[in-house]
Image 1: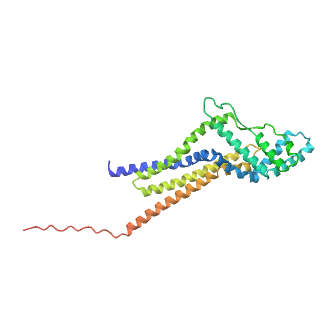
Image 2: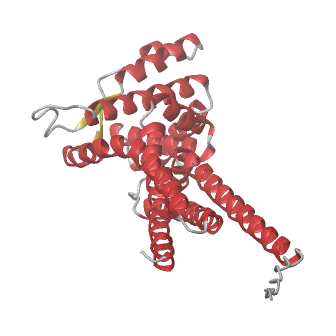
Image 3: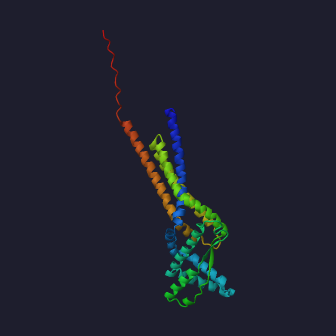
Length: 308
C-alpha cells in the first residue's frame, strides 16, 4: 500500500476510534454511577443521609404527615384547618430531632435493600407479578422507642401498625430488572472499552500529537454531554412530578443523588481540556523550534576529474 494511502487509512481509523471512545465515556459514567453509586448501600446512604437536614425535604415531609393525619382523622370543617396547622407544626418540630434523622436513615436503608433485592432476584418467575412493598412498622417502632427515651409525653401509647408503601409496581420492576442486569455488565466494560479505544486510536494515528489533542477535546465534549444529560434529566424529573410532591424537595433529592455525576462531568471537561492544551502547546513549540533552526547545508558535489 502506498505511504500516502496508508497514512490516510490510519488517520481515518484513528478518528473513528476516538469518536467511539468519546461516545462511550458518558454512557459508561452513567452506568458506573447507577451500579456503584446508587446500587451500593453505603454510598447511597452517604448521599441521601444529609437530606434529613434539608429544609425543603423537612417541609415536604411535614406536609405529607399533616395530609396523612387529616385523611385518617375525621373532623368537621371548622376544626380541619386548626388540626392541620397543629399537626404540621408538630411534624416540622419532629423533623429537627435525632429521632427523625434515625427514621430517615432506617427508611432509606429499608427501601434501598427492598429494591435491590427485587432487582437482583433471578430464576423462573421469581418475583414476577409482585410489587416491591416496604413495611414502615419497624421504622415506626424505632421512632417510638426514641421518643420514649426523650421523655415525649404519651410516646409509649403511639400505635405501631403494619404500614406498607409501594416502592415499585410490578410493571416497573420487570422493566427495571432487565435494565439493571445490563447496567451491571456495562458499568465495568464501557469505561474500560472507552479507554482501550482511545489508546488504540492514538497508537494507530500517523500524527499522534494531533490524535492526543483530538482525544482531549473529545473527552471534554463527552463531559459536557454528560452534564447536559444530567441537567436534562433533572428538568424532566421535576416536570413530571405528581401534584402532591414538592418540586423543591424532589430537586434536593435529585441533586444529592447526582452529585457524583456532576463531579465526573467537571473531571472529564478539565482533564480533556488540559490534555488537548498540552498537546497543542507541545506541537506549537516543536514547530517553532523547527522554524528557528538554521537550515542544514546541502553537500556540494565535487567535480569529476578526468585523467589524461
